[in-house]
Each structure stands twice: as C-alpha cells, then as structure tokens.
Image 1 (cartoon, helix red, strand yellow):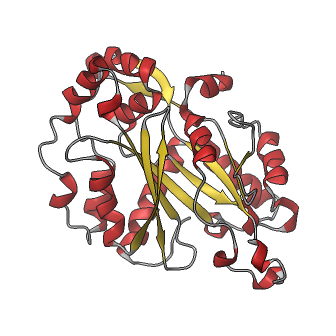
Image 2 (cartoon, rainbow, N blue to C red):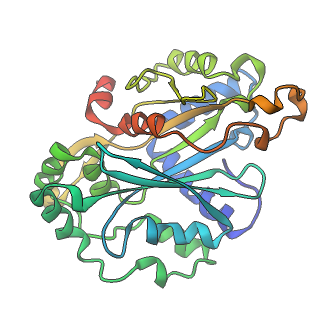
Length: 303
C-alpha cells in the first residue's frame, strides 16, 4: 500500500494510508501478524486491491466532484453501481500502472431521503457554495491530502448525528467522518499459498481477535463465483461533536479480497499470472453487504 515512488498520486495515497492506519488499529494488527509469520517483510509487500470513499450526493460535492482528483492522476472511470435500499450510487476507477489500487467512490442519493433528513444534511452541506476540488492544485500532494483530511462543513451536533443514524447509517458516517479513507483492501490471492484464499486468510484474522462482518455471510461471493470479499467490522472512534459532546461511533475498517483466475486463463501457470488474468471490477451484492461494516448491528459486536 505504501508507495516508494515520488509521483504526486503516490504521495497522496501514502498520506491517506498513514492517517487511516492510525485511526484503524486492526490495520497494524494484521500487518504485524503477517510479518511475524514471515508472510511479508513489511507493509510494502501487501498488494492493495482497492480503497473506498463515501460522499454526499449534493450540489458541489459527491462523485462528480471527488472523482476529479483521481481522474487527474491517470485513473479511468469504469462501471456504475446502484444500491436501491441504501439509496447509493457508486463507480470504480482503475489505473494502468501495475499494483495501483482500484478506487471505489460512492455517494448518498440525498434527494431520496425523508425531508427531515434532507434538511439536516443540507444544513451542513449548503455551506459549500462551489466545488472545492476546483480550487485545488491537484499536482500539489500536500494541498490535496490536507483537503481530504479537512472539514467541509461545521462539526455536526450529536443530536443531528443520531437523527441521521436512524434513517441512513451511511449519512451519519459521512456527516462526521467526511472524506476519511473508509477502507483499504488486502489482495489475499497475492499472498503465499498458506494464506492465499479468503477462507484461509479469514482464519488468520479471526485468530487475532478481529471480528468479521457477517452480513450476507462472512465471505461475500459474486454471482460468477470469481470475486470473494470479507471485511472486519469498523473500529470505533471517540468522536467529539459540537457543544463538546462525545460518543463512540463507527470509524473505518479493513477489507480482504480474493480475485480468482478467469476461466479462459486457467491453463496459465501461477508464476505467470497477471492482474488482467483475474476477475476485475466489483459486484453490487457483495459491496452492499461490505457497506454494513460500519453499521451498528455489526460494530456493536466489538463490545
């Protein structure tokens, strides 16, 4: 995940990961276990399948704004996904460079929520009067990373957070966490044979005392059976709200993905397999359940 290259996008990704790993103790717990078992030598050896961000689908924000950062740095927009019950849209983005993480950006369809919930969200997001990404020098890594870790609206009140929580746990997460990295993803098929399947890797993770999201099953499987995904439940953070009120809420989590070899490439020897030989993209049904890694029903299992 941590890049040695000095290109702007690598600096941005490195900074994002640093902040993320400091907020999510499970990241270092898993990495340290892999190092201890001599599976990897350092974090550098882990291939990051993808990283994900959550946004509000409102004027001047959402996917249309956020994606500009990654499109500017060589990413290509790929497939669209719709999550009807959660009222979300999403796209994923790929990069031509080897081992660059895919980007998954989702947004809440705010206009489909109740009027009361919309009013709460707009009370904060209406402060953003123009697209903030347009004001950035996207070739300045420090400027971009500062933007991604800075508030776009006022600190929410605990009352507003709790009201959003009742209708959309996604909305409550974004209103507080903003553009924090939602999760990064370990490509388990890139590990040694002992841990290169999700079934094997999950045993390692659970052995560390890390609880896995079991919504839709611990292992979420695509319809073609070629994309398998699991995730930890979100680590809690002690959130400070307006008026100095505090509450433990969902932060971010870690995902694990296994991309199987496509049928037409089954005859290729393992040592010659490349990324293009494996199942690419995402699956709506899988992602729908992965979103729930920050939902109370899952997170409360950590108590």
